[in-house]
Image 1 (cartoon, rainbow, N blue to C red):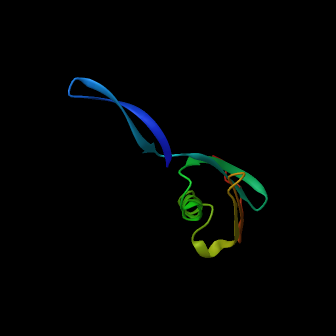
Image 2: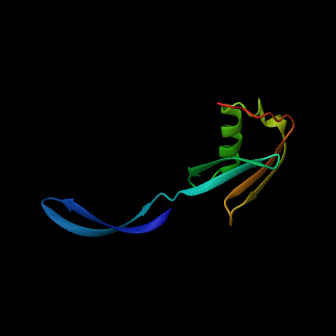
Length: 90
């Protein structure tokens, strides 16, 4: 969460108020040495986010297909090695 100052309109008056807003980062997935996607996401639970994306996109059938997972939060990059790898052409 990022601290942020907002202007609120309430009871026919404007007032400034401090609050927090969600942050998003561009997370790039590299699978078996090949960059496959960059997605915007909140910077939490990134491993679960990556696993879920790979399963729902059909790149893997379960978490057991993942051999290694490395996350670089300075470059927002997930390096993932999986058992089976094929190129999907849409």
